[in-house]
Image (cartoon, rainbow, N blue to C red; front, top):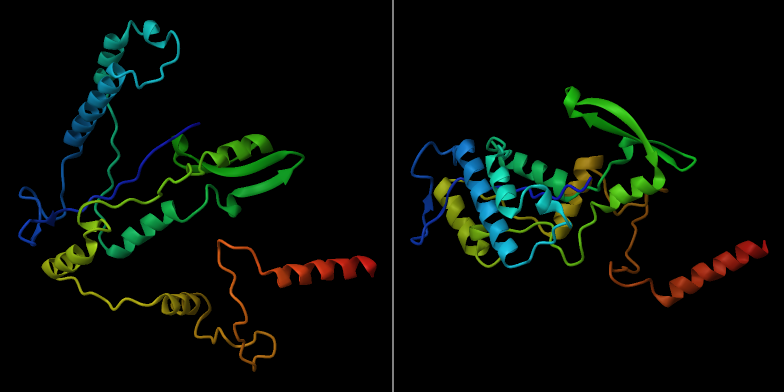
Length: 253
């Protein structure tokens, strides 16, 4: 069930040392490289590093595994003969599609609530797509412990960064390189919103043109900020004491 993988988005071009945008010298501006060539190149690159790690004794191989395949050399040759698959999507036509793609994989949990159909007597019924039968939707019932185990496979290791950027998009150079790329590609640069403006815009998109500071009960009063609790610290002591006293009074009643 372990399925480690990486999603990569590769720009079709880059910035030269002269500070100009350069498309690939061969092909069209919406073409980067042939898929068949990429498959062969990736296999060679991967296998070369696998061999280096084996020689440096950095691989943990199950006991008797290589002997079963006739030794490391025969096993390596068997892997070379396989037809490796490299899945490459077509170029995105708009920047909005890039954002939607990233959002699906970087800002969601392992499984959405709508796919969990039932929880009963230690069994969890989940919905999935059977891609062997045309991606039709089916339901599967598994033990709760197995469901938790599969869910935990999607939890990133400690100090692991979910999104990494390189080249002209890296944090060290993007402040200078992105304006150059926009100018060269003749892309209009919208004014960047502040954090508060982005919040108001998101609420407006969800609920329409509403006053988020207006009291939702009386529809007249204006709510005011009393205290803000940051993500990395607990609530103030007086709030904890207030909650504690409320619980005590509730028990007495």
